[in-house]
Length: 65
Image (cartoon, rainbow, N blue to C red; front, side, top):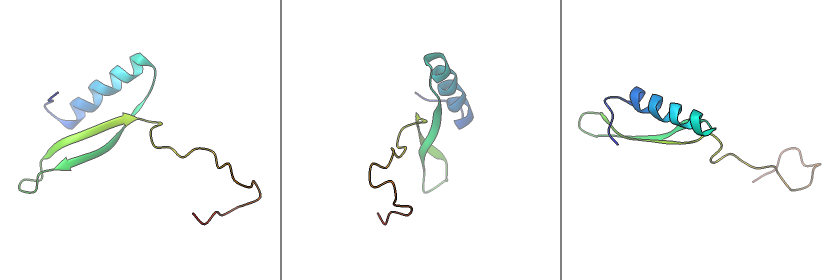
């Protein structure tokens, strides 16, 4: 889909996601090298990519990896 601005696209998907029952966030965007114009913006569910609960030893305060 094409929109007039990034704000219009965000508002459209934000309204849609609220009706369905979840939130969105801006994932990333691509800008053209010549004009610096935003050519692509991806939106994702706000829980996508979140780190899960650490299942290792509960006594470890600062894991290395």
